[in-house]
Image (cartoon, rainbow, N blue to C red; front, top):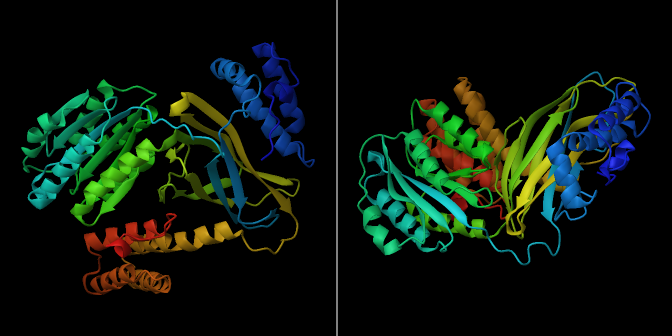
Length: 494
């Protein structure tokens, strides 16, 4: 992606141009350069440049930020680099739709983040205290919550909400927390009632709102082992409201009974994570890792707003780093945060409808990456587009190694997804064969424990026409974990 830096120059204007002059310059350029009327090489790219400049300069607020922060150079102080790899060098003129993958990587430039000081945290910890949590499970969760509170700094704010079919604040939102003084209240929590996740989320959100500041790291952490019923739409609506304020929702699901589809969806909507907890004793370590991750946050509130090109469909979107998980197939993509010594990486699968012979370059999408650097109190908007040349004959070349590697790992996760779909459609034989193929690949990769889990579930499927709830989650989150940089499934870390 090559960008002319000065937006005014793109439109042939000076910095004192009026809004009317900006609109007129854009309309004139669009008449000359729009891909529907101009098929000259480079015309599509030039038009995209013009469109990006117009979208910024025609918006008074964005223009003011552009003029003030960048001195007509929006990329001069950009602390990250965004790079793209395609699975193929070009598209073709064919009568059939074509598939192309794009691997997009956002990395921190060398030298950035060396003097990182994590901004204050505003955390709401929501604990499931329904009857299913009774016993050692709840005791471990309570001890883990207390341990997290001990690690907070004086400038951090936290609240603890307990919920079953109602919700109460065991710790109202506050800073300078007297942990010894709150321990008895947390230890006094008892398991009872049913599981209504919305009650907990709503109470936790309201506690977090009391000390909400845009420049803080505002994060909801939900710990549950239960399956909520009837309030899923309310949970999703709350998640959308949270996302608009850049409040992240992450979840830890214990055992096999919790609603993974709902909690994955809440994470996707807000840029959070959903983690499967096979052994409750791992909760303390997982919360500690979450806190360390927050402390190392360099960029946050990362989102990708985009529009697809004509005849282009986004079939699949997956985040590979720093967390692994399915993304929405519509704009915006909420990507969460970027820790130091890490990178954001997403893989997009497009199908492209047959292209007119006159078109020489396909626009897959155009949009903008937005993010903030909390330690510097700066926000950035980076125009971004994907275009691919069109050739009459195929250029035989294998995909880049990074894309081959990502697709080979993602294939296992998508195979288990397809098996789940086949089971829901009553196609049990197809699902059995697909899961056996998953197990074969896992054995080949040395993931013996996870492979055995898959084969055990195949046996259960043969006799019961279903998988166990625990097995579904072990396979789903185990194959997902293989996509992370360390490449280790949860089963292999037992």
